[in-house]
Length: 364
Image (cartoon, rainbow, N blue to C red; front, side, top):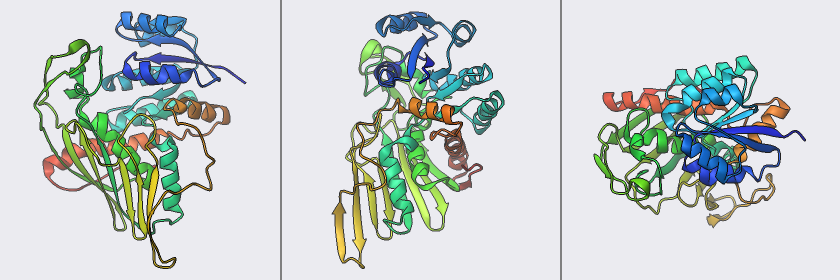
């Protein structure tokens, strides 16, 4: 079995708590280098996780390190430049979300991957999650009849509020980032993962908290000017044929009792329990309303098509990418899905400004 050499760029909290520790559970991989524009942080991660090499930027990494796969966990605005350099250098790629800020950027990355003959997998990981796949199967099998609506909930109290950070979170509130790219991307990806590409979008969005205060970590107490972009979104989607959806997303919900995803149909409801988090939800429930069976009530469904499995880990995106490389197939985390979600997010500002529903331009 081939061992795939992996380099990781972007030594932030998600790399520290998720990707690097979970990579140790994938025997086909070897983490050979870490990279960060803050050299001290790259060096610290290399020492802490016993990684043999560290680099201060993507150019030095590509010039001096022998590796097969790049994991891009850098900040949102940096993804496109990093991804293009890696793809053009002939490296397979997994990129954190969103992989680009425009449809054109994502298309450019896809074309670069095709030209270089490498595989490209795109976060968010929701299309790979067992609970999302189970719900998609049940919908396709007609378990809840004709789907009429999907509701996704992906919001929290803001990046300055809910987690320890050793880096300044101010960039989350500046152009090129924001709540739509950080949180909306999750709800939109879940919605299209279960129902396929949407046809239209409309949106209401506001700035609810124009000033933020960092609550924890190295910048505890710092005030952040947060009036550049909306931080509170209510997004509506239309799939046609009488099926619509709503995604609420943003940085203005410090706590909630709303489940992350529900799908409503003419014969019942499917829901993923729990809040949005790294990995999967807290289980799938189904409400069945069947006049034929004379049954109405909540069930805890079990899949007959997918075998039981252990806990899902976000770094399984790497196993999915390696499988695509070795079998010359498309990763489950197809960048076409990511591009469609970016299409939605890029159309939203125009829909807000014009106060109307607008068509989308991509599919998958």
